[in-house]
Image (cartoon, rainbow, N blue to C red; front, side):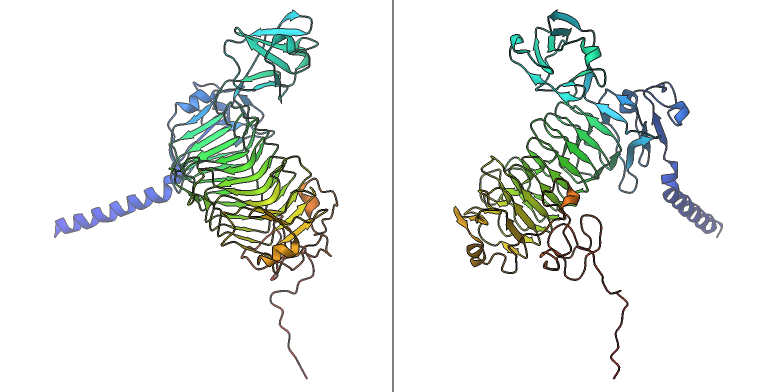
Length: 515
């Protein structure tokens, strides 16, 4: 009897201990602080007055799920942050910021100092390693690489030879470029997450990585929030082999690549509320790269402002995904392009839904320009409630090649041209509006000026629709509940990324007929 009593008490005690452990484990987490000016790596790091100094200290410290590592705002680090720990589903490790002011900066570059005159307006400094690609910056502006010393004739021209960096400057570079100075990229990334999951990176300014500002490569979910990522040679944000949420980020000025790049085996991911602009290739690209890679699926791309790239979105082997509520303008090629990179059937883009996007095609010299493109086995997709507004008289609103012209649902869109009649280029032939509709495309669509509030739109707010827009109430119900600006949608949604607001009866209104 006594043994049973002891066992019962033991079970109760064990249950209580486990319950307390589960309920309070998050409260055991620790917040660490990093201060580049006043920190010291001999400190504990657990208060703003006892902060660490260097990223290297963070890299070699093991963290627990729920821990936070916060970098002081207004400070700059020239080290690569490599996350060596993982969080958990319920308790991500948070890498973020504290204090007031500008976001903490992590740069992939080093400053070049100690300049001497070479001759006339040519200055030189010792630089043991040749700068990678074109990653030399003059007060934050990418310089102009020259292949011969004699070609240094203008500000921001540079040349490297025999462990020496030569630049053109009419005065001492340390005085002429006193804001950010002259910087050379030396680190591949600013932040690297490889084989570590359940991590949230937020509130950083990442700049001048050789290949990318941040790379996340893990099968467990991660989040990237409120990051300014810029001036990488390749892509500013690269993810692969897992699931990621990218939100409220600005990605810009990649030299030869993309703003956001989702690579092989990226699934069930979200890109939302981001500003992707002035990237050399795509604002957003999805590319599994090789035919042997798993197809990409379950991607949501919504409420993004994407402009002044080559393609707004370049989506390869992308399946069962949703693209909605985006504004895409002044991209020199396609607004949204579906494409099979591997070149064979079965690796195109299928079963995607594309709705309530607003796309402007500028006057461009790129002969592949259009609003929406479906190529190389990109079939069985649904396109509804989109505005495609074309300024170029020679470029079509829609491009569908002969391998993609089946299984498509295209309806309730507004396809408008300032001049020219080429609404669609289908299977190698130009199609007028009448011929386009004869293909059973846009039988409920419109071919009218959507009437933006600005006749020469340059920013996202310029694409708001006038109250008399022909797009009002002309969309079909696709299941979304708010527009790009967060405004609620009515029973009959408008076409495009914006919902015209007007008088609407309250939902609890009941009318009674009395004789």
